[in-house]
Length: 384
Image (cartoon, rainbow, N blue to C red):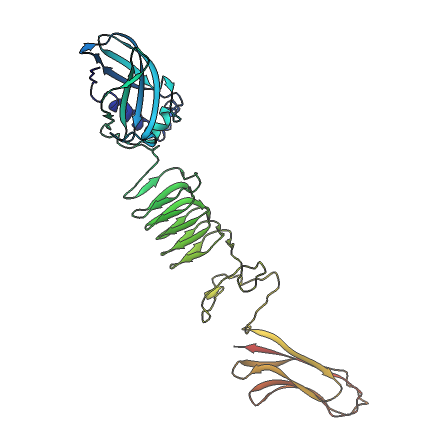
C-alpha cells in the first residue's frame, strides 16, 4: 500500500483551539467559556492512494497521537480512536475526536495538556487488519498560539500579574516563581508559594510555606510558615500554623496577629515568642499606643518586674524587720502603709520604717513595750 498525506492539516486547527482556550479564560464572554468541551472535535483533511491510485469509498481508519516521532512504547501513545472515513478521489475530511475512542484520554484532555505531538494513521485492509502508514506527522504550533493557559506546565520568566484569583488546587501543586514577582488584585491560593521578588495580593492562603523577598496583602495572610527577607505588610489578620521569619518590619494594619506555634519550654499549649536570651521585647515602645498596655488574664513572669511591686507587709506587737528583696542597685523602696491602734494607756512609742541594711532594703516596725497596741506596716519598691 502506497500513500501520501497532505502537510500539517492538523497543526493549524489544533493550535487555534489552544489559543482560543486561553482567550476563553480571560475575556469574560460566556459564548467562549466552553471551547474545550467534552465533545471537542479537531478538523483534519488528508489525501490517500492505494497502489498509486486515489482511494474512493468507505474505509476504517485509526488515528493516533504520540508524544515521540518514532518510539512505539505504550507509554508514548497519548490518544487514539477509530473512524469510518469516506474517500472521494483520494481526499477525505474528518473531525478528530468524533470517532470511537480507543484510548483512556479524550481529545479535550490531550489539547488542554499542550504537549508536542505526532499524528499516525492506520488503514484497515480487506481482511480487517489495520495497516500503519509509514512515518508520523509532527503537530506544529501556529505563531502567537504556541502556549495554552490550560497547559500542565506554566513557566514565567518575569513578573506575573493576575487581575483575579491565582489558584493551585491540585494536591501537592506548588507555585514557584524564583525569578519574578507575584501580583494579584484578588486571592492567591496555593499549596506553597516561592519567589525571590515581591508577593502582592488582596489575600494569600496556603497550607504550605510562603517564601518571598517581600510581602504585601490587603486582606488576610494565612500560611503554614512564612519566610520573608524584606518587610511584611498585612491589612488584616495574620494566621500562621508554623514559623514566621522576616528580616524586615512586619506590620498588621487591622484585627489580630495570631501564632499557631506552642511554647516549647512550657508544653502547655501556650504560644511562644522566642528570641536570643539577651534580647528585649518592647511593648508600646515610644508610647505608640496611647491607651497603654492591658492584660486581662494572669500575668506570670520569671524575671524582674520593672515597676512598682508590693514586696512586704507586717503587723505585730513586738519589734521586727524583714528584707524587701531589693538591693540599692536594683531599685528604691518606700513606706506605703502605717497603721496603729495605740491608745493613751500605752505610753510606749510605735513606728514603721524602711531602711537600708548594707545594700538591701528592709521594712521594720517597733513597739517599745506595753503590749497594748498593734502596728501594721507595708512597703513598695520601684525596681529600675
